[in-house]
Length: 95
Image 1 (cartoon, helix red, strand yellow):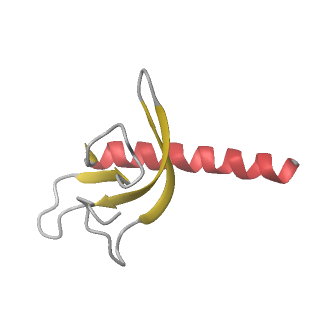
Image 2 (image 1 turned 30 degrees about the horizontal axis):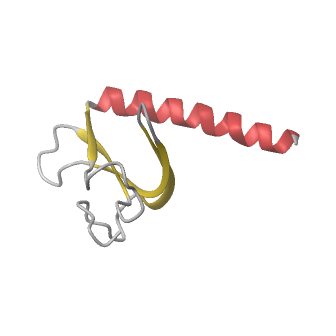
């Protein structure tokens, strides 16, 4: 991801995850970066950012998606992620 828009460093939440870009006429697998962050000074929101590796993605120009979340929204998302992580872990134990 040499042409990335996001800064990736030791503080990035996930610097290499599997991702899929889907559109009406395409579906393309790629690597991605995912990051949760907030401003260092006077934070007023949580930002969830992700960017697909545009070196392999042929349908979309280089871009980054960013959700701006209130603390309550961030906690709701975190709780839902925890719930699904537990569900996946339990399913893999049953196999």
